[in-house]
Image (cartoon, rainbow, N blue to C red; front, side):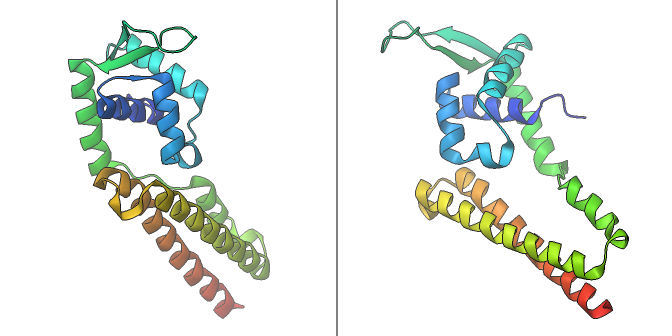
Length: 183
């Protein structure tokens, strides 16, 4: 089991990327990169995650010397040595072993015998429409951020969902075909 939640993992990555970042900096980057849509990350989870990472000793708060604007001076966070090690280990673990999937869809597949084939085909065609719309949204976000000119790590955040959506579309199309052949 992972000792870092997905939000904490993402926060460590962003702080490492910025070298130091405030909660506000992170919120802007989450919005800009579209993390809200696919990672289910909101303002509250960002600040709760920063607190947890600080409590674990993986990030350290630093208050800026100079103030900009009317609000309070933002607290910026930096990775500690332990945080750098944790991030590195989590990256290696996630790239080598993590396998996430939509468990709800799998439950629906397991329950196919409980509905008619025609109903299943209609529902699966709706899924194809949904996947097509998801692909368009990812494509628009990708292009608005700079497309092929983005750094590889950012491009990969878009290219991976494209690949998953294409694979899912192919799977659903094959399943529809098989259901129609059985009917």
